[in-house]
Amino acid sequence: MRTFGAIIIAVWVGWFSSEPAFAEKRVALVIGNSAYENVARLGNPANDATAMTETLKEAGFDVVDSRRNLNIADMRRAFRDFSDKARDADVAVVYFAGHGIEVDGANYVIPVDAALERDLDVFDEAFSLDRILATIEPAKQLRLVILDACRLNPFAKTMKRTIGSRAVGRGLARVEPNSPNTLIAFASKADSIASDGDSKNSPFTSALVRHIATPGLDLRKAFGFVRDDVLRSTSNRQEPYVYGSLGGDDVPLVPAKPVLTEPGNPQADIRRDYELALQLGTREGWNAFLAQVPGGYYANLAKGQLNKIASEEARVVATEKARIAAEESARLAAEGARQTEQAKAAALAQAAEEARVAAEKAKQVEHAKVAAAEQARVASEQPAAEKIAAMKVDAGTVAGIDRTAEKAAGDKAPMEARPREPKLPQVASLPAETTAVSALAAGLLIKEIKIELRRTGCYSGRIDESWPKGSSNEPVRKFARYARLSSAPEEPSAQLLELLKSKPDGFCPLECGGREVERNGRCIKREAPRRAMTPKPLSGVARADAAYSNGTYRVCMGATTGCYARDTIKWGEEHARQWCSRRPTC
Image (cartoon, rainbow, N blue to C red; front, side, top):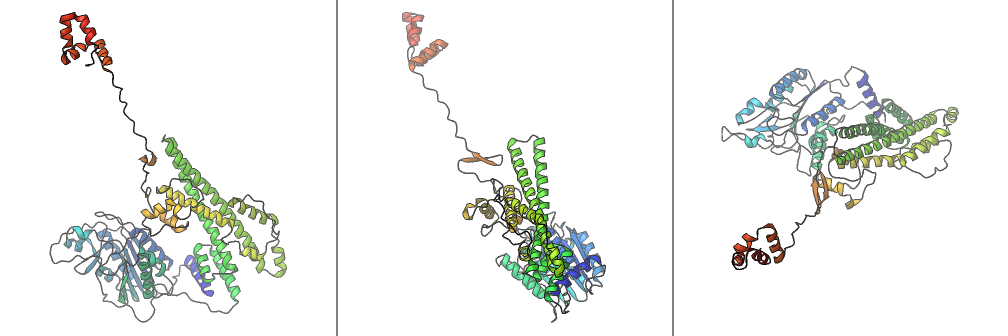
């Protein structure tokens, strides 16, 4: 139990003291190359480098030099500067995410300005793994190189070969370090390709940040856990690999925290740990506490504190979305956009505002519940004489908390009679998932998912809190189909929301029915083709009368039958005109 207290104390020391957390000096260089100039850019290396930087900083590294999108000159300068930091270090780590290439059995990482038109260009435009190893060679205890660079190399197909026998491999080549206590970790084993990933980070880095900085965990076991996670997430298509060797002792990247073994009352220890986490007041602190104390009275209080933090985060997100939606609606109105666009923007703004109001109510409920729970906890831990006075909570405050929870949940039923004095078991159950606030949070989550489904083009319905079940949830099934998920999620979840947020606008192409057509990004009913009006044919007499009236009867009659010419000679022009006009020849 005192392990958690030691963790919290270490966090405080890291914040408020300039002394290093551990005796040995640990340094790291982190590089993420995404914005390649001569080939398609990579989506995740910059994000991967950010995640690894945060992980190493939280692990207490003395130096974490983080760089992004380096050209060859910047890369040479970065490694030259880092060699000075590694000279007196005990642990030196280099992490690179981006493109890598293997030529004639030697491995290179590729700067963003490389063109690599010929195989010889790799010696001038790329940076060799041997040079990286030479940079960290002075480190005394551990030298670690991590390459998330086994992606499909776009240079290999276009690169000209100056010598026919020179090989340009697929992925990176197997390597054996010459120095002891040196490890080289590949995202995928030699001669194979690693995935860049469909989410914010690559599968390899996602697993890496979960395990590599675990205090006291031997690196070999940490990379074993990373391998298992990547195989699981890629359906066994990608297997990370580690080259090099270490001695018989455990070699953790982050030393184990000291464990205090002083005797004491376990419940008192839990209380002290809870109060340390309360002073820290962060999500990380409460998660660390719950990892040590997964159940019981104090665990329920800690979950309530996490709900309080989550409600504040949800309020901030909802407020920002409401502001953006309102600005967009105002912009469209000012620019005189089409009524349909203004109506759509206004609907989004209204939904965002409703979500903001609901988030604000949820925050108020969580803060009030936590305040009541803390008051009851303090009362329970005071001497008996003081406990009675402290537990006389104002009945109006308790009733107000209950009314707020019911109003936020939309419950119109009359309130049941409640005891005017709180009891400790009731306070301990406040953060349970069955409360009205949890129902409210679920409704907010569904609204957020529907807003993202609409943004990605997978949904065009109302933004409400309903969640269709199974096959009737066509928008989620459509998103799963285009996102290439193995199955459509059955229930709303934070993971689904994050995946939706990672996709661009219009991710789901518009699909119109057989009797619909696409127009201005919407499906509208197809209009029936207009039939050309065929004039009713005139009778022969009518045609002749028309020819007589407009003077064309001479040409028509004469060219067709010659009747006009014959009648003119025999009967005269007037008779010919009258008689020929009645002939159905025009």
